[in-house]
Image (cartoon, rainbow, N blue to C red):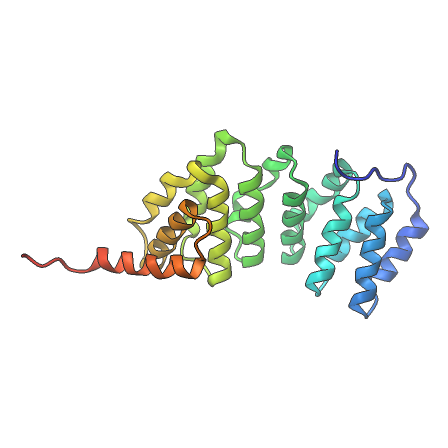
Length: 228
């Protein structure tokens, strides 16, 4: 394991202190509290760190909370993390999925469900796509790609980029689903699928450039043909 081992015995008083520190009004104080919790892992810190993930408003603090969690014993974190995937709080679900992807344990793949991939909250869905693409077993990759292809054309640029990146991670296993999506569905979904194929073929191509070329390609395919 790459993470530090948690201390053998939990310290409830320290956990209470961490909860208080993570509730500080100053984001820099919360950031420092999370950093300290990750620097000196303690099993009692896992619950307060997870609880704060659900409500933390500052991106950098959320990122540090995830870092702190993955410094703890992964089996202990996952045992407490899985229930968060069912939370009614969207941020709790998205942060749990994000942490799941960072831990990267293939055994956690079954915890990612179709309803996560289709979640109406864009941040939850994006986190689910990333986690799923990174954790899916080879035998399930094509089926995952077919499910992800249902999301082509969804959301703004950032949402669409996240989906394209998930397909890039899937690689050849996603090619058939991307190809099918280019010839069905609404125009924006077709554009997104073509752009995704370009990103898969050339990861160095910028997403805006890929979208531009994809729109042109889809427009040309849709243009009426004249008899010469």
